[in-house]
Length: 522
Image (cartoon, rainbow, N blue to C red; front, side, top):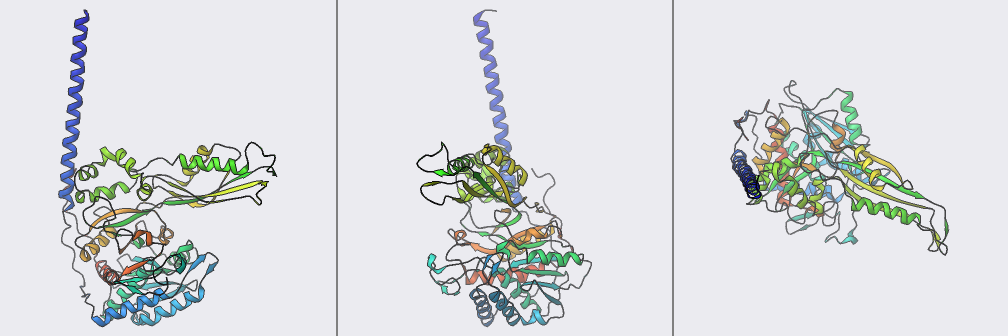
């Protein structure tokens, strides 16, 4: 074979390869384009006609509006602070008990409602339904709050419940007394208007959620388990309505948490012989530990975006993004690696991409001229739903790779199971329907809680746990959560009361209707 002939054949093969590659790219582009607009069409499909249930009007008079806001402010003024598992403001918790009995007389006097105190300060309400064949559900919230110090920069005292420009300020306004009071206020209005639920339900109000819920939620669950209770679904705090928070998204989005990240606190320690600073060893205990910490921070946990339900969040919202983001979000099967690399640049978005690693404490040394014999650091990790606690611990050991560093698990747990969120999911669709009743302009999607809630203790009672309250967050508001100037607007709290008022009625359907979505959907 001549050189010219061989060259011609090579050129021909290269051309065929380029043509094949172009055809593959064209097919991928066509599939992605079809998928982009198919998802947009399907996003507009509505569920079939819902079964009719009692429809008690949620109209609130001017006097009732002032009363419900007054009651809410009273709740905020009571400093139900959890400082630690062994230090809580129990006198405030007792005062809160008395407040509930005073401002919700219909609940505490109704023959339909059984009230029990659990561990002195948590509350369990059992609301009887007229059809015992229907599996009950449960609404959760928590009474306790994290500490707050006016000197940190609050515009008003953190337990004053003062109003500024239509907002009520105070610790607990968005975590989580808005749900405590909103759930009970909604039920109070229903009972006042003669409502008898078809589907029974429970309300659980924990008093120590901020310090892990081991006294409140854990013991409420024990009571329910002892009675053989099984739940259709559980709804707790967690995610919210995000308006202007998700970059590139047109309009607000209500994210319903279908899982929570796991958590681990790991202690790293180094022990060495002490000595005088004038004759230092090559590496001190602090140096060895600092090296281990540096390796953990520089070698982050693997990117796992797309391996958990966080992918569904963006797919559900894809049709509300503008181009080119709409194209990308509708085709995460193709663009997940690219998107995850972009997301990890932001601390907020990085939490959805991987297990996060945060060094939160570093302790060593007793005197400036003494080489310390001991150094320790604590690392807090929030575990992605596609990983386990043990896998994370193994990765920590592998990353540090230093026998001088002792790695100990202080406490931790795996990510929570992922609850159903398809079109046949009773709890998810009931919550979604109620959100759309209240806020027709909102897009609803599943989401992941990066923090933890009392609901994690309820996994033995139900397979479906959701984390959502219709608290409205605009840019800057997420930082108020456990931060300074925590607040909620008057209107948002009123809407929140009506949300639970409507949700309880919506739960009275026996079944959700079948969807009209095509079974041939891409």
